[in-house]
Length: 157
Picture (cartoon, rainbow, N blue to C red):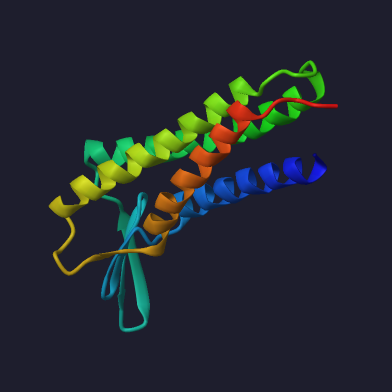
């Protein structure tokens, strides 16, 4: 039972770390000397780097909000898990923890979908998605699986 709890906590923390990195790092899209993320657009020329604020459309603000919400809900889910671990009665399920984690996964999925659809409006055709964008998509199934495990999990002695 201890190994199961440890595995669940590691899975949850892995998804949380991926969410943090994908939200903060400047590599959602890359085009030669230009990298773009949720917060800034950076250009590298002659060894120097110049960064401007990100595109100010409503959709990028929605993606920013959804990614931040996914982090908040995932952190709250981890906190609730530890609270429920010590207060939940024997045989009880971690429904609240699971719901918060599933919501976090749905937020990151929605943000990544909006970014995928709308980024073609301002990125060049040669642009490729960066590793932070891929990490966001990897965090989605990890958070979803973690949330489903919480819903199924029963507290035992």
